[in-house]
Image (cartoon, rainbow, N blue to C red; front, side):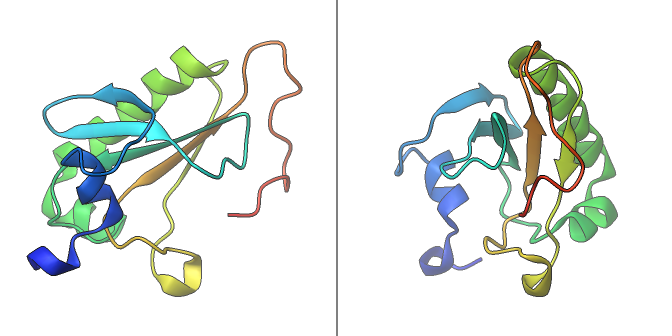
Length: 122
């Protein structure tokens, strides 16, 4: 990506835009979605701008993809009841609006009704 084409996620990673960060490591950052679709709705984002979607990430750095999935599970345990949905929107027609690979982690706190099938429209 050219400097002028930096995604909103790149700007969050750089500290240029505030976010409610819940996890930060050398290769990943996670923060709360600004328009949550579930009681727990987090975004897990690789810090590299190299990959537009999960297909590119899987082909280019499967270890980073595995780290992202493991981080999603850890965050679902910490912020929800451990059960979660992991969603990658891949392509504009699939609802991807930010072309910097990221995963949506959706969960619910322990003791809450949880997520029902068909309850989310992403």
